Length: 430
Image (tube, rainbow, N blue to C red; front, side):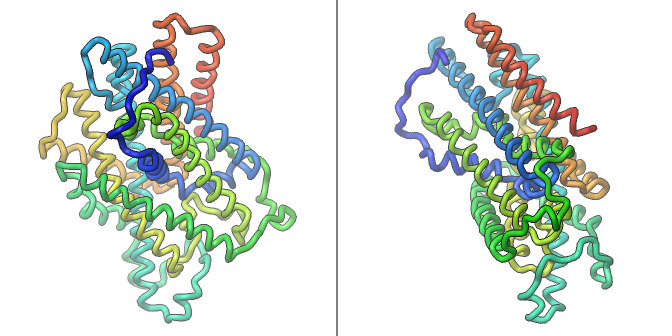
């Protein structure tokens, strides 16, 4: 892209740090739903669509970084350097302030939908952890060690199971997470969130151990739910779009990386995410011992509460998400207040009000609509339509038009990307 300048690579964070930071960020709520999405789309079609969406989102995310570098270079030439923090800054610079505010509002909406998914998953983890602790306390050692995939939807048979319900745990989370959201400095959560790599690595190993113990179970004659393609494929496209969505945070995440390596590191990060997703999805799909149609939208739901390995996975992921959620609230607060007041406000009152609103939204969803699969596919397709497919292409075409390089082929190819994002969103409701 014209306008890019070479800069020294000393004093920047290493590429390894950047790549694993991207991997850790993208390995969130979607990771647990990948096997379910493969089931919904069919084995062959699911792999193809995952590759397609990964490629499209990598391209548009690359556009964000390239445009950010153009903005930095042009401001440097004008001796008017303004730090590029988020994608809305690009919208303000290349188009206008009003468009930038619209982008910020859309970003807040996508963040809120992500917070709902986090709260639903955290509530489910807490419920299963509590249930596991109770069952461990009343189960003998032999049963404890031989836990296997358990029945789904079992009726409570004890007073504890009558009290400890999926309606209670979302409320209990408030007492722990809300005070964390009031902390002024988010650096503590950034450090804790970096430990999330441990949880993800453990989950990958957990899947490997389970797949090895199950062996290959891929016989369409015995299991009619095994298909190469399926009409319910929008469940995958919506969910996987969220799995590769980092567009509204990629600038901040790569600011400390050397300018000459940012795009390369982004590509490596996406490749690592893609390999992880495909490994999890394919491994579970071809080895899962029961009918593929019984794979849940959170794969950990397919394991009994007394499964020791699954218990550790739930504890680790609950810790990771509990550290990430305050960061989500922090980002939502900064962007919302920036639109309302045009400046950053970090008063306790605003921290309390915004945190209460975000948590209330997640709480209501977890109590009355705890369908994580539906939440992921809708929030993913919405985030994809706005930030992964439409806004990067619009800003890029605006820049090309200013430079006199917006050819018909370039314009129509980017219009096609926007159209694919729109179709993906609409299909979630059909």
